[in-house]
Length: 144
Image 1 (cartoon, helix red, strand yellow):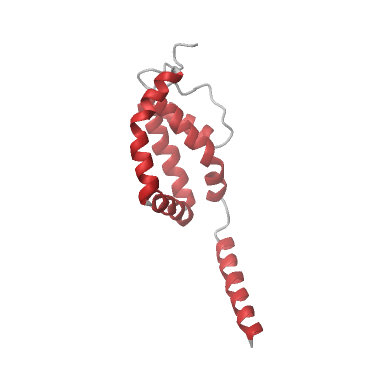
Image 2: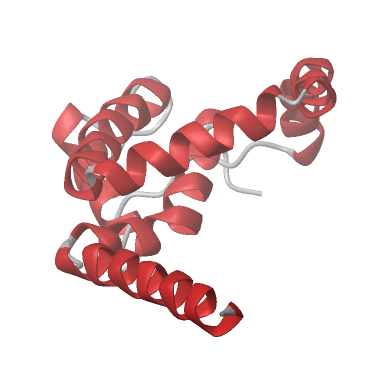
């Protein structure tokens, strides 16, 4: 096993303290509220959301990796990694810490959809709202 890759036992030990908080979020409904807020934020201005994820996520990645990953020397290395993780997933930098792996997992899971949404035509949402309203009108007329 390479020296920079955490052992599975180390990763489990790192994540285990978060289990009670994660379970509490699921039980209280705060998790659902958090998801709704994240979705609303991403939809309200996906380009800003993308910028925050790339810049904020990149800086967080740098902070997580800088002391253990010789390839992550500057915040720009983290930002470049995050930008590539959101799309093509190619870089010469790989996460070596549990936090780096978590950030990479988030970026690679949600990044492509977020990047796509950032460049969608905002008019499409208006068109969708118009169609929904027309459908409602048609249903009301059909009842008569």
